[in-house]
Image (tube, helix red, strand yellow):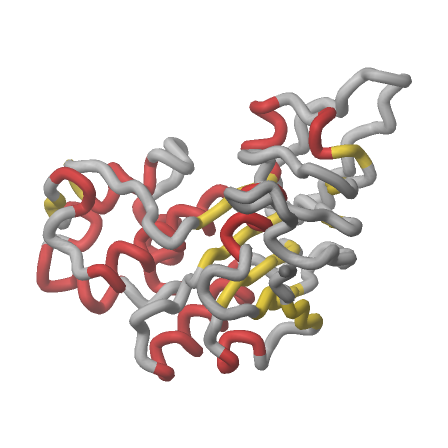
Length: 239
């Protein structure tokens, strides 16, 4: 499949069109000095400056409460930056139509939302056209498939909110769902929280192998998660 082109440069005040969601969709996020206010109106963390190209991995490292999740929300376009600028494929994030942005950027939060039904039903939310083989491959990439084999596989029944899965299994199901979206930019908030070291390594390796052309920003307070990243950015709290 040929590489997907970045959205064409729009005329002034015209937002970019949708970015194709092909296997080789390419994206770059360049968050320039940006701040987040806390409840007192002060910046939550010191200004940051980073750039991501297709296939890059950047680890965002900081203790809990230092603004990692807030920065990911800003990069996903879910909260507004109070200062600085965020560019996606060369265009200001604010110029992207909602549908195009959601097809290009995927955020996996710390507490992902799952639905009642089956494992396949949850995966189909991201890729209704995905075949059983494609779904299984995504589950294998995040080391979840073996745990489902004796429970119905793709047909494994889930209650509301993903009841029936452990916390770690629910997180891996959300990660598999993100793989099926094949985003240009993947934002991961504490993706290996609660995993043992071997599982964490397997999951991160599986994501990298499944999405070789995706730019990944991984937020974690675990030093081991940052070891394989090409860039490390440490958030420093202000005040």
